Image (tube, rainbow, N blue to C red; front, side, top):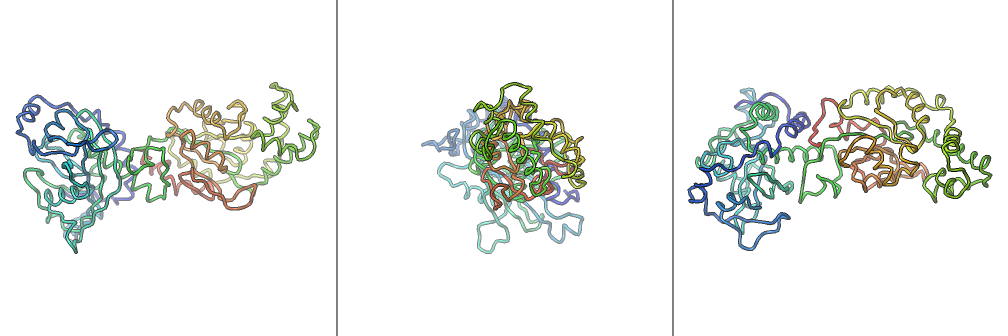
Length: 489
């Protein structure tokens, strides 16, 4: 079939979003029907007695394996290969209107014991007992489609990308996903009739439309493999750091990320950068307050900050200030009495960036400062209308921002239960590390430290950017028209 003219890379985000929303394993996987069960029991299905590499839930092989028919009847964990075959059209197809890179999709034989007659966007096969997965992947595409990636001088290439677990009511397997670049003509494909009815050429736009219109025509684990492939491809394109502990952080047990449910922006030195002028004024105000109102010697405010996480917590903990709402409010008002309108100005680039963000994902300001200070900063920048709420030091019970309690409180305020569905932007490596402990996904904004004046980095952030305006470059999925929201991402 001729594919729609849509460039491959541009479609990654939108297609993956559609895949994630439309295709859940539970929806498209039905139990074995009675006729198939009888055929399996009698050994009439294709390769029914073939020995399969069975594994446990952690992908550790069993000692003896099992016959294919028993794998299907009992839904045993096993290994399987999945291959996304990218095809750049040859001259003949280009002349007929084919546009750039597409995916080759198999229509499975009706003789198959699993998903007979379904469309498979990541064809492969069940791994035999004692067989290497890489050899299986190469053998399957050669036998079923005539694509040879093993012979010296072959114009086609293959590489492994990751391993992933998959399970539904019909199949439980550890999938080994490979990418093949097929550089031949579509007409050169030779189908193995007992395995494959035909091979079709689809753009991602085609797959999206066909799967939305007729989801029951597709193989659910093949669609899942394609979603994972698109997420992986996207992450490599934007240079996303792999972090263990997250769904997509381990290439040996790769998974889909949840769609972001909330985005948390730090305020000072993150939403704006003014060479730390506001921060300097704030530090001076805190020092002045401690000397004037608490009678502390100069420099004591910084000691309290270093020991307790904030000067306010230090003042309360060491008895320099009454622990009551009125006293705390007076302190917060006094130290944040800054000439914000003289220090900050409207940021049209920031306004446009926030305007372009996906409106379905609520945005919050998450600050260690006081609400009224954040409100004044937002108004000065001209972005006060883009945020759902401000989560300030009062909102989190006066705990330090780099504490687990602060992040849990912010999640509760935002109504998010899955930490991995939270995206966080901050200029503090301490806060980024705390976010990682809780399971938030983070971006370090600013690569020079305020206190040290030297380059900083965080191994706990997925990305590091110099300024907030670079967010679309590393997280296009957060923006309208660039969403890959499988989790997507």
